[in-house]
Length: 296
Image 1 (spheres, rainbow, N blue to C red):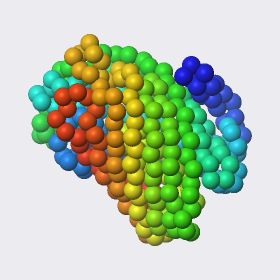
Image 2: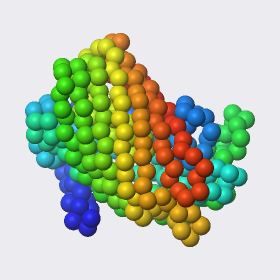
Image 3: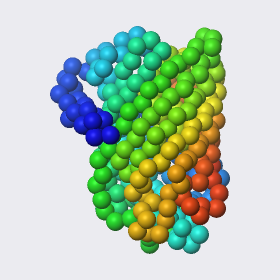
């Protein structure tokens, strides 16, 4: 893990050096909220990811050299307790990171690093309190919020795309994540339909939903389905000092619909089941994911 972290941090530090040699090749966005899922406003209640991708030229699936494509990602997340605010701590977290996407043929790899800011100074708990108050919603349970902390992390992944036909593919993957949580995960995703088959796909950390970093402008409808299983190590989001214990494993199952009626307009909705994350969690939960793509 130390070697992985060192290599990933080198990418994060070196990436801006090549900024003047690169151009924007796409952006990725995904909004998750349990309001669009089971609507219970608890546990993994909301998150947003924004990715900005740059490379030496327009995205070419056949030209993915190491260090050429760089993804800069911003992620915010709110994790809320249930059961009167006592079953797990409240978490407000913001992370910034960079990773390179590379590979040859059907193989796709990524390697990167990030830094995560946790606690009241992120302003997320205050934002949620004000938002709920403005719309006359039930106040969030923020009394048990984790204290301020800065955590450095690294990530690595590998995937292989099997082409079933021109409009269908399946993609098994494996990934390692360090930082606020240590996770080793394996899974697979199925994509059926013309939209997205030639694009660069990214992965949401919370739901595992794939979302596009590039858009070739292909119109039509595509369906996504996927599942994965993870082994969990240390979790700063579930510290033993707060009387909570993380489960040793987690699983996720997801479905999604991607509709692109026009080359510059697309809409995505997905639903993901997350298994229990801590001992004593009464059940899993369902998150909804949304993305509106407008390309000009």
